[in-house]
Image (cartoon, rainbow, N blue to C red):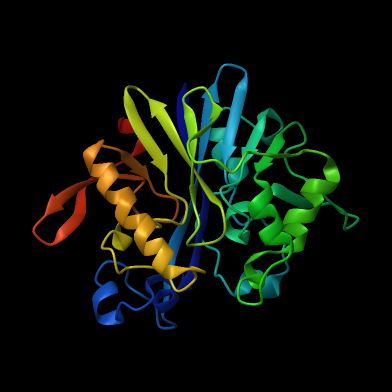
Length: 280
């Protein structure tokens, strides 16, 4: 098995929304905001190369939305999905599996492209797209608070293509040899976190359970989360497990750090080391 970091660019989100009840005077030390209170975040995906499988975990925001929509999120940086895949010697057509942690637009927007005639089609024509039935139902019938994150043009064409597959909603279920799936229910219903055995280490793709190293302290829970107290409890249990079992955390949204480990301190669980995936 080989793992490859796939950077798809940066975007901006409101710092207050990203840190919930934590005051700006505290969070801005680790994530400085611009004049509009916006902080920069990565859209860092992961490519798993194993035998005849090439598995892409999440795929960023894509580029099919109109300028008004994209203007709200200030896309920036030189990285794109295609450019990052090409740097590793691959193209979209090589992908066999697109694993979607959840269906918020910044995680699945690259799943679908808009053709010149305006029609929508899968960006990965040779791949199965993986979600789970519980989260899919949640996304296609969204609540009023979350519906702006679930864009039908990102989701419904996957089903229409016949390429959609579901993973059983069962914590610890195997997706592929060396890859088991954890479920989390605080950020959105039935978000999936791949847990990967790699070079005698365990790497967990954190998605939005832990967006960045700035979110390690327990109260640092996003205002975007549907069930923040559930997130708090999930995060508390996971972080302790991560220390006990020496997990490596792969960070999807941290603008600087790809991976980190944790340590126990007098103030609770805190950051230990940060490093790039390639150094493992």
